[in-house]
Structures are given as structure tokens and as C-alpha cells.
Image 1 (cartoon, helix red, strand yellow):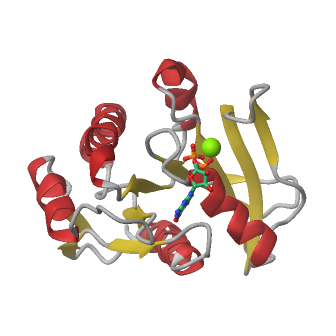
Image 2: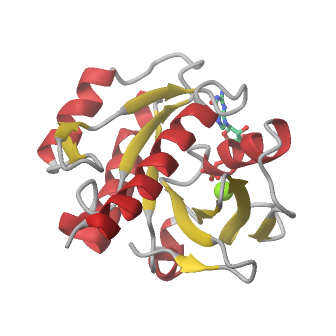
Length: 203
Ligand SMILES: Nc1nc2c(ncn2[C@@H]2O[C@H](COP(=O)(O)OP(=O)(O)O)[C@@H](O)[C@H]2O)c(=O)[nH]1
Ligand SMILES: [Mg+2]
């Protein structure tokens, strides 16, 4: 919620990808760094022997005069403690919702856990958006239904950096093809940076 300074003196904003196991977090981040060339340095992944995220993936993007440090959490339920740690000092959150209808419960479990950690700050102090991922597959949940769930959980609206209340943005994404991946990331990153600079101007 308050960016730190890197060794190069640049402000570092922390952006966390949150969501259920296998929802597509690592794929989304890999896309940006491998295909869009946004990486500054290497992607770091702490995985188990089967290649599943054990702790996090982490990488840094340089955009303009700031650094964006991007993390994905380990989605499996048993990694609860690791996930909580990743939220320390978070400046923005992207929730990756697996759009396959039969994954609804997993998504809601993950969302509830996130809300439990950040409670009222999410979408208010901390920019937040949803990537409705895997929309290339059959048997999908409708966007309207996702909006209803978000509303139910108090996340139907967010407060934008200018202090204006608006609907929480939900982007249809296909992480394996990069659809809307960079655009939604840029949106939330821009909000985090803007929020910080606007807060400096307040007396
Ligand atoms: N069809 C489809 N598969 C996806 C998409 N995004 C991710 N996947 C696949 O879903 C699986 C889990 O993705 P991963 O990024 O490891 O999930 P994570 O656990 O959230 O990091 C992998 O096999 C991906 O290739 C998508 O948009 N469409
Ligand atoms: Mg992963």
C-alpha cells in the first residue's frame, strides 16, 4: 500500500496475482514476461518437483520511472501461510478466476481467503481487478454470475484512484494466448501508481 524503493532508487510497486490452484496465474505472468518482453531480469519460481508453485513466482517489470514487482501465489489450499506472506505490502491485486463453471467453488474459496486477509482495503485502498480466465474452454460461468458473486462479497464496486466509485472490472482472458493479459495488468498497475502519486498531493 506504500511502495518501497529499489536499489536503483526507483519506486517499487508490488502486484499480486491471486486465485485458485491451476486458474492460470503463472501462465498469465509468463506471457507478459516471455512474449511481451516486459521483464527486467529473470523470472524466479519456487516450485515442487512436479512443477507446481510451492511458494511464488516473482518477476520485475520496468515501466516508465517505476518498477513493478509481480508475484503469483501458490494456489493449493495447503499453502495458506505462504499466500498470506505474499500479501505483505501489496499495492494491487489481480484475481484470476477460472471461468470453467465446475471451478466456481474453488474460485469462491480463494476469493474468500483473499478478502479475509485484506478485508475492506481491497478495491478501496488497494486496486483490484478480475481476470476471468480460460474463456476459450466450454462450460463457462457467465460474467453476470461473477458480478453477482463479487457484489455478494462486497466487491461489486471499487474506488478508483480519483476517489470515484465504479464497477469492478472483469476482463475476459485467455492466458495461454495472451488475450487481455497485458491490458488488464497495465490497468491495475496504472491505478496503483496513480493512487500513490495522487495521495502525495493530499495535504
Ligand atoms: N485452455 C486454457 N488453459 C489455460 C489458460 N490459462 C492457463 N491454462 C492452463 O491451465 C493450467 C494451469 O495454469 P497455471 O498458470 O500453472 O495455473 P496457476 O496454478 O494458477 O499458476 C496449465 O495447464 C495452463 O496451460 C487459458 O486461458 N485457457
Ligand atoms: Mg502457479
